[in-house]
Structures are given as C-alpha cells and as structure tokens.
Image 1 (cartoon, helix red, strand yellow):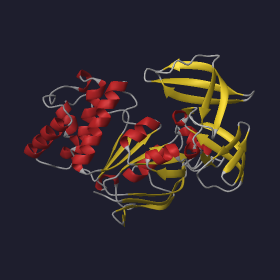
Image 2: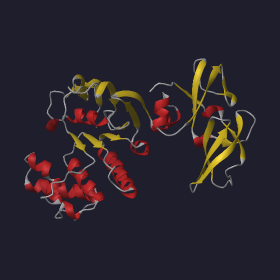
Image 3: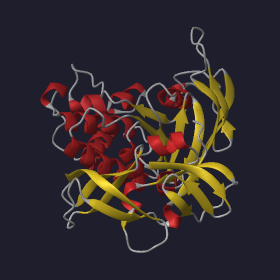
Image 4: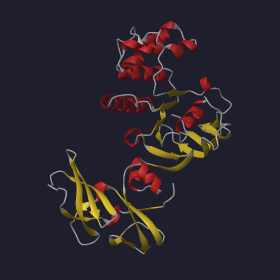
Length: 346
C-alpha cells in the first residue's frame, strides 16, 4: 500500500490563459480509494497524468511514501493509468496484450504465462487468452485492459473515466470487480469521474475540483449532506436552495421563519435541503404549504414539484405509496437538522 501526497501541485500549459491544475494539495492514505470529481476540463485527468509521470508539473511535488517521485520516470513509479478507451493492441491476442508490460520488463516466458493466466482468472476472462480484441465485448475489453494494468503489480492504480463507454449493467459489474480487486490487492486507487453516483460507489473520499482548484475533500455522505459551497451542492446533486436572513437559530425566508440546527454566521444565508429529506407535514415547526405542479412516478418514489408563492418551488421526493397529483395542496416539513447553510461562491 502506498501513501500519496500531492503538495501545492500546479500545471500550466503555455497557450492556456489559466493553469490546468492550481496549487493542489491532497493527502491520499495508503490503500485508500480516492475519487477526483468535477466537470469536464476541471483538471482531473491532468492530475492523474502528473501522478503517473506522463506530465511534469510546473510547480509542486508528488510524494509516494514520503519520497518525491518527480525525478523518477513513469515506468519506475509503479503507478498504472487505465483510460476510458481500453487501447488494446488489435494485432495481439488477449493473453499477449495482458503480458505486454511483463515482456517489456524482460520477464521469462513461463513467468509471463503464469501471471497472465492468474490475472485473467481474477478478472473473469479465463480461457480468453487466444482471442483477439475484436472478438471481445465492451465489458470484456475493459476487463482485459484492467488485467493488463494489474498484472504489473503496481503500487498505485489510476482510473480515468474507466466505465463511461459501457452500458449501465456492465458499469455495475466492472465497478464491483474493481472494488473487489482493490481490496484484495491492497492498491491505493485514484479514479477520475464526472459521475457523482460512480464517485459515491467507488470512493472512500471524494475530492471536488472546479477550474483546476480543489474545493472540498470529504467522504461521499458528507459531501452530499454538508457541501462547503452552493456550487458543490449543485454539482453533487440537485438540492433545494432557500435564501434568507439568519439571526441566531432562525432564518427569515420567503417561506416564513425556519429554524436550523447547524451553526453559521448571522446575516444573509443560503440553505440547502435535499428532496428526500423533506417530509409530508408531520408537525408545526418548519411547515410550509404549496401546490403540487408536477408529479412523476419513479417506482419506489414520487418526485414532486411544489410551488410556494410566485417564485419559489421545492423538489420533493417521497414514498410512492402516497397518491399525490398536480393541483393538490400539500403541506410539507423541512426538518431543522436537514437544512444546511452554504456559501454562495464556487
């Protein structure tokens, strides 16, 4: 297991007006699964390439187990990078593709054959050694690419949107496989994704990046329920936002006075609340009334749009056993513990 420290990491490209990565400091525990989450162009893949040694930073340092690896070439870092496009050599068999890195290292034929067979078995491709890449499905190709990466027994596994080209059921299967292999092999793993659900499923902690800058690092549950800013709250889902003026534990809003539990400075505040935390009215405190303008059946839940006044709506997710239709008046409760204050920037 390898501890990774990114220290004030910056990467500038000559023609770009701003850095691709700017002053990124991130501490990744040995054996941890870290997700880099953010919109396209925020610098996620650049960070992976810097760690792998495919790019050199403009400033900053990268440490593995307390030692800088900046002077170490990519092939000696024991960090393998798997891209979303599997990039298998079409003229080689599956077995030859998986063993390619070992052959480049000068391993003997018997060692290569044994390691390839073991790795293919682990990724559920035993018996596929002689097939060509064109004979594989998308999921099989990704598993072959994963085997090619892991057969080198790396210290660090870097995954760049590895499942984005797969159908939903294949993504689920590959995620489960990666989690199983990561645990069994004890790999420090960093996965890049723009998919919030994927980050939640794969990571112990999630680092959110906007415009090359680190915004927040936290376990998925904390990011979802306690985002540091309105931008993070919106990127990590679709929260309701209620603005008001806070005095003590009470916020005066267009919906009336709402009590909140979490400390924040007095003054103008934006409160967020997730749709599933809103309850059908079960008390007096923090209860508001509106008209249902939209109702969508989602199987296990109903998604409702509730209009309160002329310019305020709430997105509500409730149990599907309720029969609630557009035009119906509805009272809901906004639990004080579910109202979370955020800053407006980023």
